[in-house]
Length: 599
Ligand SMILES: *[C@@H]1O[C@H](CO)[C@@H](O)[C@H](O)[C@H]1NC(C)=O
Ligand SMILES: *[C@@H]1O[C@H](CO)[C@@H](O)[C@H](O)[C@H]1NC(C)=O
Ligand SMILES: *[C@@H]1O[C@H](CO)[C@@H](O)[C@H](O)[C@H]1NC(C)=O
Ligand SMILES: *[C@@H]1O[C@H](CO)[C@@H](O)[C@H](O)[C@H]1NC(C)=O
Ligand SMILES: *[C@@H]1O[C@H](CO)[C@@H](O)[C@H](O)[C@H]1NC(C)=O
Ligand SMILES: *[C@@H]1O[C@H](CO)[C@@H](O)[C@H](O)[C@H]1NC(C)=O
Ligand SMILES: *[C@@H]1O[C@H](CO)[C@@H](O)[C@H](O)[C@H]1NC(C)=O
Ligand SMILES: *[C@@H]1O[C@H](CO)[C@@H](O)[C@H](O)[C@H]1NC(C)=O
Image 1 (cartoon, rainbow, N blue to C red):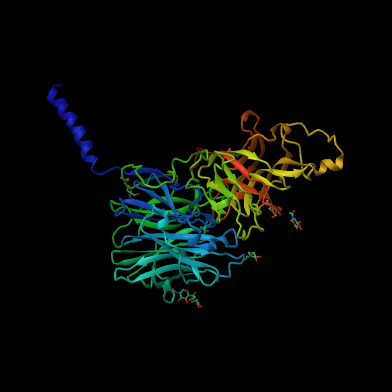
Image 2: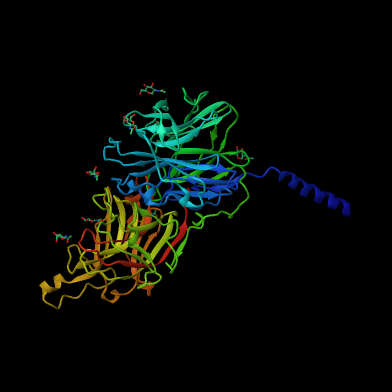
C-alpha cells in the first residue's frame, strides 16, 4: 500500500467522524436528576442568565424552603439558594399545623428580567376541609444567586393550590391553579397583578380527564395553541401527566386523545408515581420534562428518599401534542450542552453528595442543611468559645414529634439535617460533649420524614432502672447497686435510647444504660443504610471505632411515606421537661454516599 492511499483512507475515516460530529450524539444520563426530597419540580432555561437551567421544588415545612438548583449542562446540578430564606418573608410557616403542611408545588418562571415563584403555603387540617388558612403567594427576585434578592411573599386569594403565573402575548397576566379538590376537582384561572396579588374572579378552564385531583397546571403557548399540562390520579401509584389544548388561553380546553402523556402506573418499573411535570426547552430548541417520582417499585415500598425529581426528553412536533419518553434509571435523550461545573452559588453539587463538616470557627451552616419550620437562631452556634469546632445545639422543649405531630409552637424544634440522597449511605456525627442534668434531656441523631414519622437514637438522661431498660449490647448487665436501693433509683445516668414514631408499627424502644467506661467521652452516633430496606443505628466511643455497637437494625417503612423525604440530622430536646437543659455539642458531621439504586 503506497503512502498516498494510506493518507486518503485516514482522511476518509477522520473526515467522516468530523462530519458526524456536527450532529452531536444523543446523551446518556441517570434519573433521578435531583435525588432525595425534591418533589413537584418546576424548571426553566434562561439564556439571559448565562444559558442556565434553574429548578425549584416543594419543601413543605423544611426551612430554608423552596430550594433552587442550577445547571449549565443538565447533568451537574448545584444548589444555589432558597427562595424562602428569611422568616419575615412568610412568618406563618412557623404556625402551619400539620406535618403535611407548608410549601406545596412552586412554579418557577422568568419574565423580562425577573424571576417569579408562585406557590401555596398549605395549612392542612386532618379532614382537609378548611381552606381558610391556605395562603397563595408570589415571590419575585432579580438574582437567584443572591437569595436575599427574593421578595417577601405577596398574597393572593385562591381556594386551592399548585398555582402558576402565565404571561399571554397580548400582555395579560394570569394565574392558573388547582381548585381544592374537596370543593370540586377543577383547574381554574384568574387574571392577576403579580406585583400586588390582585386577582379577578376565578373560572374553571378544565376538569381533567376524570382522574383524582387534577392539579399542577402549566400552560405553554406554542404554534397557535395554548397547551395545558396537569397532574391527575393523586401523587400515588395512579399518578399521571395529562394534557389539553385550546386556541384561547381561557379555554375551552380539549383533552388530548393520547392521554396520559406520561405515567408509570400499571408498569413494573422501579420508578413509580410519576407526575406533576413541567416542560422547558434547552438552548438547541429541544424539549425536556421534569416530574416527580418515587423509587418504590409497583409494591410502593422502601422509598425513604420520598418524591424525587426525574427528567425525560420530549418530542414536540409543530401543531401536535408532545410525546414524552418513558422514565427509567438510565436514560437516552437529546444531545446535552457540554459538561460544565462553572455554576455560581454557594451550595454543593448534587452529584458531589458527601459531607465532611467540622464546624470550624468562622463558618456557617452549609446551604443544604435544613431545619423543620423556623429554627430558634440562638439554638445553633458554630464553634462557641467553650467548644471550638463543634455545633452547639440548645435543646427545644418539644422533641421531634412535638405536639402529637402538629403545630410546633413558636419556640420551634432544635433539629438540623440534610436530605438522604442515596439508597446506601453512612451518616455519622460525634457527640463531642453533652452534660445533661435534667431527666429526659436528650441529644441524638434522627432519620426524620415528618413529625409523625421519624427514627431517633439519642443519649438521654434517665433514672437508673427506668422501665423497659435492657443491658447494653455487647456489655455485661450493670452490676447490682451497691448503695441503698431507693437512693440509687433517684440517680440519673446516661442511657442510649432508640425510639421510632410512625403511623405504622415501629419496633419497641431500645433503652440501655451507657457503659460506664463511655461516660464523658465523645461518642460517634451513626445511621447507615445497609441495604435498600433497612437502617442500622450504632454508637461507640469516637476514639475507639472498633467498640461501635449496633443498637438496632430496622426497616425504613416508617419513613417511606407521604409527601416529603427523609432528612438525616441531629436534635437536642428536653422532651417537654422544665428548664432550658444542657446543649449537645456535635462535631465531625459526615455523610458518605455508598450506592444509588436505579432499577
Ligand atoms: C392542629 O390540628 C389538630 C388536629 O387536626 C387540632 O386538634 C389542633 O387544634 C390544631 N392546632 C392548631 C394550633 O390549629
Ligand atoms: C377570597 O375569595 C373568596 C371566594 O371567591 C371570597 O369569598 C373572599 O371574600 C375573598 N377574600 C378576599 C380577602 O378577597
Ligand atoms: C367542570 O365540571 C363542572 C361540574 O363539576 C361543570 O359545571 C363545569 O362546566 C365543568 N367545566 C369545564 C370547563 O368543563
Ligand atoms: C391502571 O390500571 C387500572 C386497572 O386496569 C386502571 O383503572 C387505571 O386507569 C390504570 N392507570 C393508568 C394511569 O393508566
Ligand atoms: C435522540 O433522543 C431523542 C429524544 O429522546 C429521540 O427522539 C431520538 O430518536 C434520539 N435519536 C437517536 C439517534 O437515538
Ligand atoms: C436488608 O437487611 C435486613 C437486616 O439485615 C435484612 O433482614 C433484609 O432481608 C435485607 N433486605 C434485602 C433486600 O437485602
Ligand atoms: C415527645 O415528647 C412528648 C412530651 O412533649 C412525649 O410525650 C413523647 O413521648 C415524646 N416522644 C417522641 C417519640 O418524641
Ligand atoms: C414542670 O414544672 C411544673 C411546675 O413546677 C410541674 O407541674 C410539671 O410537672 C413539670 N414538668 C416536668 C415534665 O417536669
